[in-house]
Length: 252
Image (cartoon, one colour):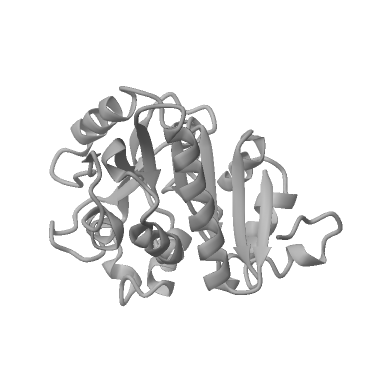
């Protein structure tokens, strides 16, 4: 995993967005279409904005997925990840297709439906982040499984994960944050050919340190990213503060 550190969050987002743009165009020079998975979180705002404004991407050749969704929120709730991504990117550029996770009345059936869509063809690019508890998608430490046999599953969200949603100002209090969600599993995310992981902010310092320096363990699910052959990690000065004191840390 190659790690890039930037002085500001804006610089980080622009660099990551540019790298994703370049990756898309490189692959489209080799194949007729792409399949991408996107994370939905405020940490991804700068990258999503860069991509939405890019005039260098032929979105008509790209099919989009997202990696998780709450169970139980109203369809029009702004906290729903489908709604977030539609606002930030999906409704702003002309994708070939956009497949949304429906967090409705039959989550088990929705997991099967979405898994079928995901596994029709390989995933080319995954744009993701890392949670304060080290999760990727909603694979929190208690439910993360590096060898998961499922592609999409229902999970219980741990308290630290739910508190992050309050910290990010997505919900006003912990009791309003759903306790269950649908998530792509870790093997589903790791199956992408190229991973671009964007992690800004001081609240992510511990997770970044564990991801890069700790054991590869479900205690920090993001640590598995170190085993991927084509994963790039983008940090700002705040999220990388601990890591900048380590010898051998690669900066951009």
